[in-house]
Amino acid sequence: MDRMFQTWSMGQIELSNRLVRSATVEGLSTEDGRPTQKLIDKLTELAAGGVGMIIAGTAYISPEGQADKTSTGLHGDHVIQPLRRMCRAVQQANGILAAQLLHCGSTAGAQMLGQKEVLFGPSAMVDPVSKLRVEALSRDHVLKIINDYGKAAARAKKAGFNAVQIHAAHGYLINQFLSRSRNHRNDQYGGSVQNRGRLLYQVYEEIRGAVGHDYPVMIKMSAHDGFTGGVMPEEAAETASTLDALGIDAIEVSAGTPEGACAGGWDHIIPAPFTEGSFFEYAALIKDTVQCPVITVEGWRDPLKIERALESIDAVSMSRPFIREPDLVNRWAGGDLSPAKCTSCNTCLDLISESGLGCIFHEKTEKLKKR
Image 1 (cartoon, rainbow, N blue to C red):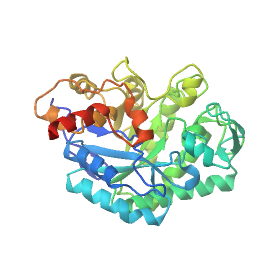
Image 2: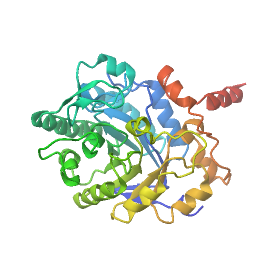
Image 3: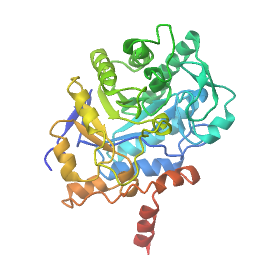
Image 4: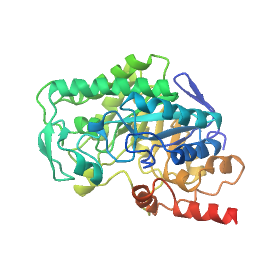
């Protein structure tokens, strides 16, 4: 397992291994965006379990961009101090913690959709997933969102996060601008691949200006939206190449959108049975296009397969396996190379909406340990 446990660099950060916790909705923050102690404990447990880098669940950059009622916020200065406590706890457990920045656009959970007076996106349309009316963002509104990203990144750095990640995947606002299906604009933000990527590039530049050149800025992007008409691999590779030239520090490559599932294709959350590393070919395509580190995500369970993937990619990220086994990396490092116990039953998704991030099997194991 030499490759999994090699150090690697992302910007100015040196990471102890090539296993990354991919961001997931945690549902463990207060309604004004502050992390609860339960969230702090969950992330600290991951750090103690040996994960090379933890990407925390989505943090909304503005109330308008909030996707879930109990997600973490980076929308105001009131969250800085509680997030600082969270960052310190994770780092004291030897963890590296990144914040994932999000504006949801017209894609949000049912509770939030019910609270939003207006949904915004790149173009006026009926949202293909929610079937609700979407209003087109004006140019001034776009510029405000770009500014909100910069302010949110500055708050993340001030709170003590080691890095930030731009969420540009899975049908949220930046992904909507990149997609021909959602973006019908005829101004500088629509048309060609380069124009559809303009919002993303301007967001990156705004964040870079806010945090400086030595602070790591990553992206999570969809390399295939899961249906014809959305983002396709060749377009994603072009976008990734531009980001690489601008100075992005790492690219996590995912795929699939809720719109893809509605169109007869696929979403990013793939239930069992699945092919391990389902999106690896897209990460490999982008790796051939860029110089910066590339991270592959989706369905990884077997350390032997991960080791082979690392022959041509920089790191592997997982989410659900770490929900069930927060100490998975330490288990593999200790010589137990049996695959992750997660079966992708996706019961954790139900738990997130009911009581916050968790796994029924992990909770049962913990109760037995305490007996």
